[in-house]
Image 1 (cartoon, rainbow, N blue to C red):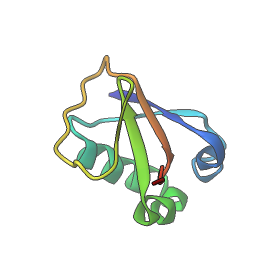
Image 2 (image 1 turned 135 degrees about the vertical axis):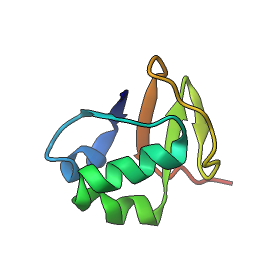
Image 3 (image 1 turned 90 degrees about the vertical axis):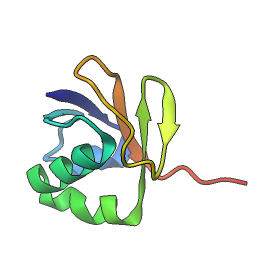
Image 4 (image 1 turned 180 degrees about the vertical axis):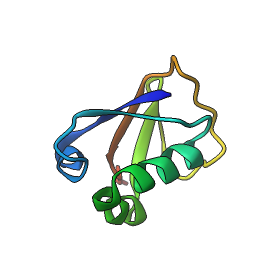
Length: 81
């Protein structure tokens, strides 16, 4: 299980939890697991989110590996220019 910190307004879509645990070995499994466990979060996930894994931010790299000791933070999609 991977501990996932939900940042900002995202926790409102996960029953108010700021941290949840999901079984996942990569980013795709993580996002699919979150959508299954917290259906209200699914719309936010489909809009796009950023995932910080061990301090590095990822957007669409689905095969990025995650292990149980990884620090994982889910946040609204970061955009900029």
